[in-house]
Length: 185
Image 1 (tube, rainbow, N blue to C red):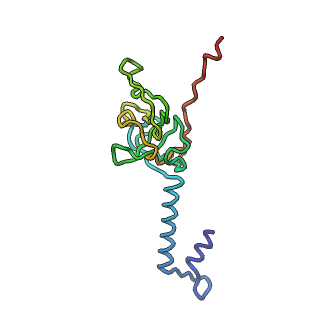
Image 2: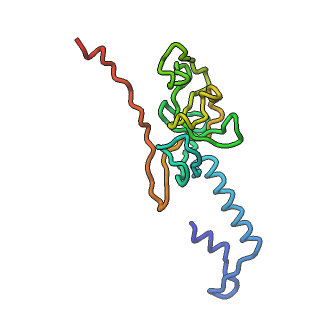
């Protein structure tokens, strides 16, 4: 298909072997390629450069490119433990954080309180999730701005790449809790 597209773009004139491309056709081809890349970036996959220490050690401060699947836009199909990207509600930027609570879940707002008398539990409202960074002291997350509306989610991180083009698949590292009360007599 590519060769036929290039062939139509550089259609030979009257003589064989002579290439002729009109500026209009070349401009049309460039515009079409740009539009196709934009649609792919908005609705399929996106590469985003990481910045900031909030997800360290899972994602490094700088230099990691995050592969983001847009299938999970608006929270479709995400689960606790997934890393999602979203429009930060407090700042004009994109952020990546780990999901720690889904709608209806009860979540300890600040786990550094260790469940003491000042510990605060909240129930995540419908249409929202709770997110935190892996590096809690350096993360601005749901502990600061509250439950995140699912409408702000732009995708799920499914992998990371770094130079020289090494790829690492990002898997959900949280495992379900085993019910030990049933296994003991």
